[in-house]
Length: 91
Image (tube, rainbow, N blue to C red; front, side, top):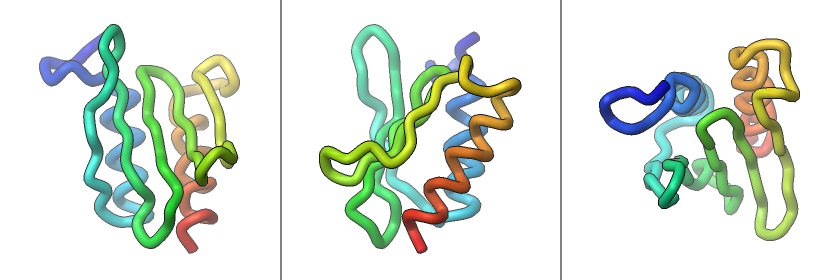
């Protein structure tokens, strides 16, 4: 279900928790049929992507973290894994 701003609850929670741990990220809204968020992890060249129900971290062509909702028992578990992976890249 989309919020009035066009993002899902998962996207709001994932972006908020990520920024709490790694610092502010200037997210861009991208996508045509589905809006997703993209930004750079502070102090790195790694990019993060937060989709309707998934998240990714890439450093250039290398995927450092890839996950979708189906990979986890609950959305919060995915968010925790994503944030932990981002934190390990950013430190």
